[in-house]
Image 1 (cartoon, rainbow, N blue to C red):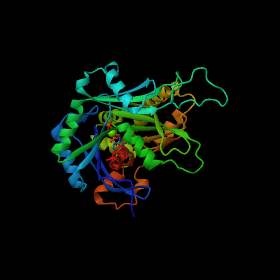
Image 2: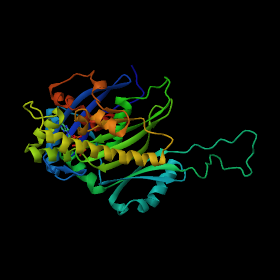
Image 3: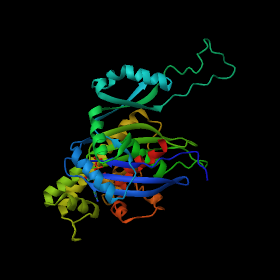
Image 4: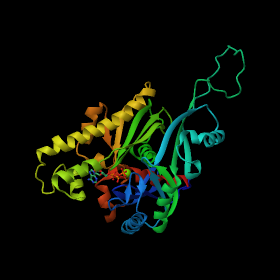
Length: 386
Ligand SMILES: Nc1ncnc2c1ncn2[C@@H]1O[C@H](COP(=O)(O)OP(=O)(O)OP(=O)(O)O)[C@@H](O)[C@H]1O
Ligand SMILES: [Mg+2]
């Protein structure tokens, strides 16, 4: 009857290159229930490389989306990604959170190539080394200060910065659509959050040996990757590595449009159906010259990030990969990527664990493309943090 954890209704809005995806969730028992969902395509060049380029077009699309999906909640969470966002993993001597904030503000210019006045800066602690326990009976020659840590151990901190004007455009688009922007996350953390809380929540209490999973979200232009390390009995995985790379399905769509003279919509339907609208088989050149090379490039991009992770985390190999975003709609992508990357790959369907809610007509198109809603689902859960 009574709950100590509060929840404020919040719409998660993933404003991306091809479309705006909206999700509203409600807490249901230990999990979540899908309350509202909708998608609205964006005109080309309204959003690109992680930037709102046409505020008018984006705010008009938000307004239409909210009306079509019958979403009345005014508070919104959004996310950003891509080259306009600087994500840097740095190592520092261990400090408390407040000291760390001071230190980062002092040293920010060293890491961020912009005038500090022009940026928003935030950080997240990825890894804090544990203080080494003194061995029983052995007295240290010099007594360490209370809570002192091993000299060699450093704290891993993820610095996130973006130009103020980047967020101002998002904010303006939301406000012109009558919404109140409440928080801004990163696409990669929103996807990781959806993985942690919806796709595969840690099973506490059972025998959990810990694991490392790579959560990869590949949309039209940006590939977001986070590796989450789970330890036994921990309620959530720890992000160990996070980065955005400029790569996505737009290359595939455009190549298909060009070679077969299709519209964007026809090309997208062709991609997910594996052939043309009339049900005839695709031309032989599709596999050999378009799809095969694209999947090889996608695997190469993921491998590059995984190799980078492995170079400093040899003791914690990645055991599996969860794929979301529009590229996860390519038929058989999990097996094709799994074979190249030599690890189990699963396509994320964030709606399956949520489907206990009432499914309305406006949700139907969304349910045909669940992996594209991973980021919006991750954002919608942030109502717990307000
Ligand atoms: N059935 C499909 N419908 C839409 N897109 C598809 C489909 N199948 C594959 N795709 C690919 O997925 C991409 C869109 O995915 P998604 O919605 O995740 O991108 P986005 O969020 O708009 O892009 P970004 O996050 O990079 O700005 C398209 O560019 C297309 O190549
Ligand atoms: Mg996206």
